[in-house]
Image (cartoon, rainbow, N blue to C red; front, side, top):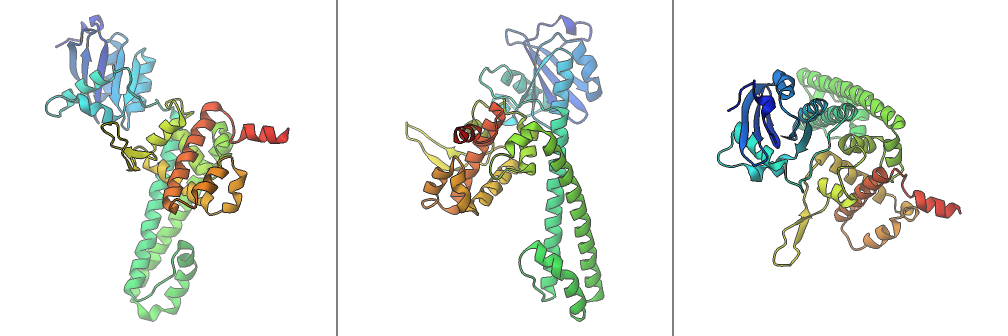
Length: 354
């Protein structure tokens, strides 16, 4: 449809990019909504191709390399926007293919009320990568521990619940009850225990790096003033949302985490169900874990500004529902701390001091 010589003469209102591993598909609209650009380019040709295009609005779905592509195009003078994939789907016409996807992105990006994904900095991506690696290692460690328990149970040996109990008793079990298992099985379990130790070392190393980052990052320090939030949660929040400018209020952040009720309302009748579980499962899990930690210490509730609410809600809500509600409240507080650049209960502390 277009040649390399007349790309810079195009009148473009928006361009949609369907990002692939090796090739990108581009579809561009002019101000009248007519398709004037339809091309397939190699990934390595991204810069040279967009240097030929006039500055315009460029949309792309949120994916692994979207933030890198967005930063690259911004340097070239374009206005890149990252769109959640769920918001692009309604604009797809006909069968799903790369060009139709790019066309749908180009249409979606010009919608005025669409919520876009905030472009992440390289530091945020690095921090996010640390959390992803740590999460994978923790999952592998749990899998290794469960496999050791399964092999022991097959030999008629049970150990009480908890990784600490298994770690403290495993070597003694292998020595005292060696006659109850074969040498091959004993060797397998010892190998799994060595894997467990190596995973512990990797997890500890990454955790220490995350904690070091939290000590030097001001936003993390503010977040850690919130009850239940430590280095892991604070750095995960900063890696995910930065200073929270993508959300207009705390409830929007809670909704993004999937901590608000799923709504199916019609005819003016509100119908609310279980939590939506949309958005970041990792962050949602961390906030619920933080809520459970707070619920374990009711003697401290009165110290917090949300203490009266928690004391009143505790008798009437199931513990899991209460933990979810508290996690939502913690998420809203975390957003407020980031958005207003203040520590938790800062105003309350000032009033108490006077």
